[in-house]
Length: 282
Image (cartoon, rainbow, N blue to C red; front, top):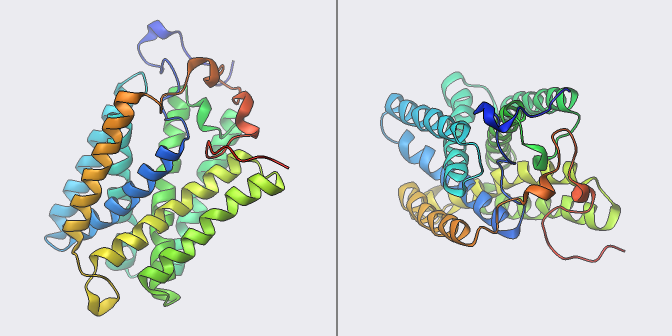
């Protein structure tokens, strides 16, 4: 059957969903990784660009190799992969603009098309885009391609808002705070599909976190606070490590096998969940 998982004894397919449960903790760590990725990428780029590229790509390859190697969800492994994608995705988006001179509107368009192609291909292949169905190797590949595309698109969106639209770092961050409330309210009040709402919010977390990271790290002369990219990256890393350590101990971010469902079937509550916030539906 298409998309079905191989027997667990094969040693290849995941034994359970390899992405975290969607809770408030997930969104907090996700936003922190976006800010940390932005600050780290910019900090590395202040030195030798070739070395920065090698470090970013090397971390990206190692972290994803480790993520694909394990057969169960591990908080530390998953978030290491997310951080590596945050750093490398930022470098990829910035590289097109800085290295090749592509304007921000061009990078936004390019990565938006890339994201749409990945999502359409994923859906046509698997029949669902639910992250609760990441129980096969192929779906895991689609998932991480989507994550990489969202990071690159989000980076381009943040730069477009701050520079092209001349909003600056703080106003851009506040604008994305308002924008990320759209899918939550649309899901809560208007019955928006929860999977669509999730990916909408997921894309917006990238420019949201990056805008505030730039605001804190960049010099006052260009609208920042002036703490420095390295300081912001280090501070965000400490908080991320603490929260992931908490998740590892509490195991509140591990999806229960009964909820993950069989391969090919979205989880029963996919249509009524988004942020694990207990909001009454009217």
